[in-house]
Length: 623
Image (cartoon, rainbow, N blue to C red; front, side, top):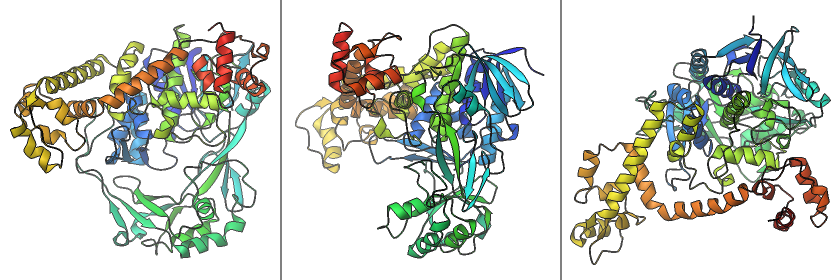
């Protein structure tokens, strides 16, 4: 039935588990992916979309690292949008609307084609831990599967409890049972656990909606894609989403059900995602607003099922239905299923190392919502990193950690481990202090070589990245060397209301002006010829424009990151005794003892540890 022993056992096949299994198997580890239902691999439990603000950057990083999320997002996309295009490139964020059924199918097929990967369908009911080391898992049928490492990616299934109005029942997702046993095993060996909540909106029948009363939201005129590889192509046709609004009438109907809402009557005690509130929470918190946006999102190319984004709720189903019927375009709406809230167990992530291995149990890794995060993309990147590090541990190789100035993935994991989270953690561009360096367009420059060295990114990926980098740099240098005379430049400058030139100057300098675009400088003698001679594609041209326009900002952030990395290089011994440092504040000593940071830089980011505490620590360490 099984191999005698696996290198890596992955528990759960959501976004975290799928990436973890793919990474470990692709690095040569004998891997088992065990899940309660093989039909639901990489299921989109909530909205049918990937990417968005900061999340799109994460998907591109996963892709550059050799993960599958970017490729599957492309193959199952029904619409592509680059968000924040009116802002600087650090804020540009790709997002796709996905075909939910195709997304799950494409993920499963990708995993089935991955060597070294076995599958098994059953609930994991416990972990086998001996001498503070994980040695395998135990299933609900009593089968014991041995593994050198285990990655838990349990999502919302650990003691999951679903709420719809005053009804509640056990479940990990609509129509699926909860998972039990693992939480008890972990608490028994000393882990601290907590409860979190998330919610999802009703799904409705698109045939019952009147789209003429809504505002159409089409995709980009020239759609892009997520993956840097040539395995996928941009969309040639797209499906539109639509937007409508709630109203005072809708809010009044919803308020009538508040006394039956588990969120307000005390039945739900755990904390939900602040940045993705339920509709009842929005009405309560933003009482001054007379309407809220609703995004009407198709669930695929051919299905009539529609996702009502912005109407997440756990109110009674009759209240949900009556309220939605008062929304423009929803007057004759038919439900496929009501919205619901779900509570589940999580483990505060300060109990992890930066590799996502637990501090208490060797060889045990956590990834995804078990760490208190929310979102497919956040889960997927943790799964990728856990899979990589589990494989490296088995191979007795050095751990792999991304720093805050190297990837959004590094920011996310560092935030979780050093600060913890008491509410579902979601990634934002504002969380990254080096976001000018961590753009979606340069994820391949930042990460492909590192992935290639791990054995994940292919030789073809590596060569493609090197060619893009080489040609972009060559184009930048060409613009630094090429001069333009006032007679040629001034008509363009005047048209763009930019001050005219009095003498010849380098094209690079003219291009650096905020009003001037790549289309403008293509008109200067020699530029278009160079583009054609060098056979530059859109990615290379875009990369050149960003390097010219933002060179000052990029250089400044690199210098700041270098300063941070000096502290990152000062390692704190794993057995360091903070209680001896009497001149450090009591709070700082307690926080440092609990988190056990690996470096001085990580210590400086722990909430409650002041710059003065860090100075004392450096003095004590002889620095």
